[in-house]
Image (cartoon, rainbow, N blue to C red; front, top):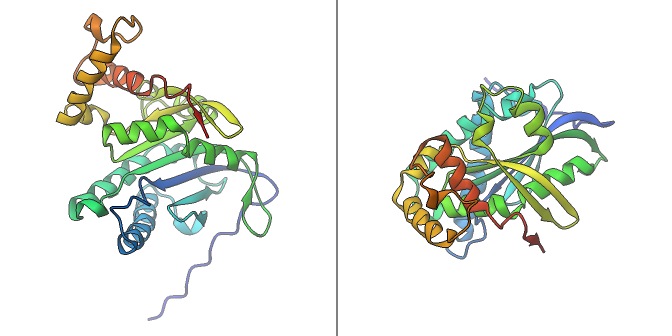
Length: 260
């Protein structure tokens, strides 16, 4: 039996309020990757997104998207609950990354940066336009997000806009604890803003050897900074306080740097 192809979702028009999400593959153009691997990763990314969305109760066909080469712009219609982008979508997406990496050679392993915002979206017949679409793109390029993902070796680094954090994460703390997010300030091009970074699985990362080595470096670089907390014995190797302190130190200074 031949099944008819599903119709793509109609793009939001006239400024509907939507979840605006972006996903990028970290290091996509790394010289250690050839074009065969890049094609493989590009296809794998779509499979991960479709599966994670389906497991989160969100139909891929109900969403609109634009390919960005090393990533995807995803627009979720107003009919989809905003809470699902925080949980369970991130949880399922991380599970897909871990499954992929378990089966792949090192050059084909994947790390993802994910950004999300909420706002009105327009489509001009060629693509999605609007201030909030631009803001999401700047979130995805924020230096603190890239730094957090690279330094920890996490599977996934998520950045939420200040609006999303205040109006979704904080109002529904049983999804993911607001305490697991770390505030950062960033500037990309003309956008200067505050955002919130979350690394799923950070407590497990804190127990890994490479992160414990990073702790030692941070301990030495802390010096007499009374803000860092480490030399006062406040650091823990796991748990929420340890997660917070590690991210605070990791991202220290990154927020003040300007993207060129």
